[in-house]
Image (tube, rainbow, N blue to C red; front, top):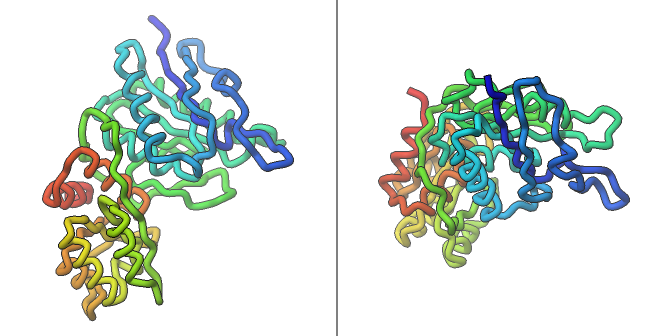
Length: 311
């Protein structure tokens, strides 16, 4: 039997970092990160970039997704691993899943400790990700996140700790996987993510609209609530054809239009906002970017978030 082929795309992050006087920086090559594998698995490294994930641009995130698609165009490839910084891994992995109609495994991994730490976690995480990408039973599960001994679906995943080796959890383990498109667009739309809190200025929404954001995601309080002044600005944004999606800053539970009072979820819906029942704000923003970049209208956006909820 021919060995199973896994492509490992490296992008930098803590797994590739060493500590310097200026802090930890990604310096290791894709070749340096190659793990020991089973005899029936061959890993082909591809060094795409070497950056901290906190400094990634949206265009670079789309570049990563295009690189995955390019590798999967080879029928001899059995799976793909992407090494990625953990700061924004939940966003890039989800973006890959939005365009991931191929059943072969795509596994994102990274590290919480630099490579020169006395007990680095990167090597074990990468080895586990490669083994998962080579495993036929991982087919059809969409993009996965393998880190700290856990495997989670990309949809709904979020980082829970700045230091713990088990750094990720999920808002819901069985979210549906509606796909945005088969091909990755070349020009991503700009979507602003705005945090809501007591005393927030309604002008933040007006400013995003004036600066020509294609869409806005609100990280609201509770189950999707805010101040009445924000509701009025949401309505003005929607009137200017800027879709507004409401998520929450709360890690767990559904986001539902329950409250009134002028700034509750019921009021936001009436103002024209679209609720993201399960995808938290960072992933809701990625979804809105993908949707707007592929020409989705309001009905398609609303349908996507509805279809993203478990039945």
